[in-house]
Length: 147
Image (cartoon, rainbow, N blue to C red; front, side):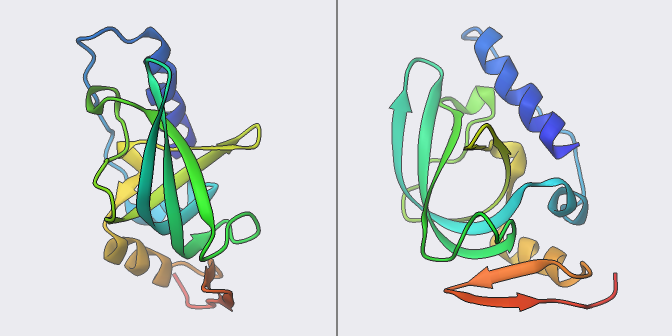
């Protein structure tokens, strides 16, 4: 579902005119966590425009809750998203920590505002999941808590 939502939001970028509006379907954090290719907390360090519709958002990864085989704490991660809020772009506040649910396609990470969560809410969702792989600062942990 998350992958489908992000795909629809990103596909809409190619067709969107100046009057586009972002709309996100509500989804429980636990469900988003299960469906994402990666779930992490990262600090936004840069935003670089990529053409008229897209931008690359650079994050310093601080904690990984899903996708630890592809992403590590301390790593710099580039996520492609829309440039404009009306097209569901990622937030642009440099230096701010964001919880992110991301999708990986053809070797690239994609995300949007529909996949942004407060870091504390992401942590709580991960604590309730059985066997969610988490990595932070090079330390890996396997949680075996029951759902």
